Image (cartoon, rainbow, N blue to C red; front, side, top):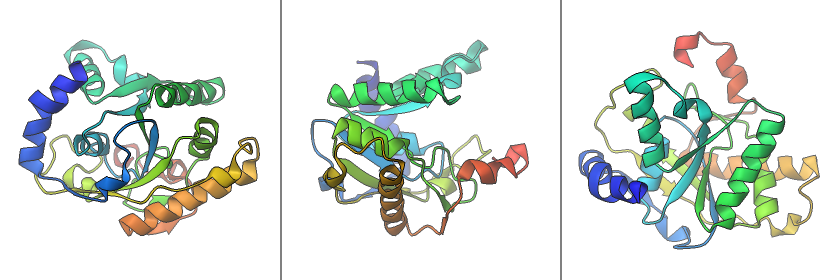
Length: 229
């Protein structure tokens, strides 16, 4: 109920009026039932505009740190993430990664749309980076359809390190669903998982027009000063 109120009666109408995001291919998203929305990741506001342009609820898996902050700022951050339909997960790796996978599978089993960023983190420079194979495993284990999503110009609306967004029109492009049923039952094969992930990244690059570098975004970020990550 809180998510619905914030999206449809409080924050959503204001953002749609002010930023006027444009959309293409929305007919490619199923109106109900489980679906994985695999998106590029350019800005913090990707998780705001992507669900905003859809009539159905979209759930994202967000760092648990966003839900545990102290004071007024921590409370406001928690409220924002809850209002935008995000669930807290531990991203520290190992068993935490398995827990993240299981959380995503539960979301899909409940019939929701699950938003996923295969790159695992925001691009530090607008370039598209190598996808992580967790998305492929979730696709095969859930059997849910996959719709590639390209966020356009959101890094200009709110670049990394900027607190107040710039008023301009971002775009959301939904591609045609991708079919990986030929790999059913092969979720334990790392070569299959890599093949699926690379196919998704190729389609995201085609939709977004981004340059692609075959390294992980986290590797690039680790080489940069902290304030530019």
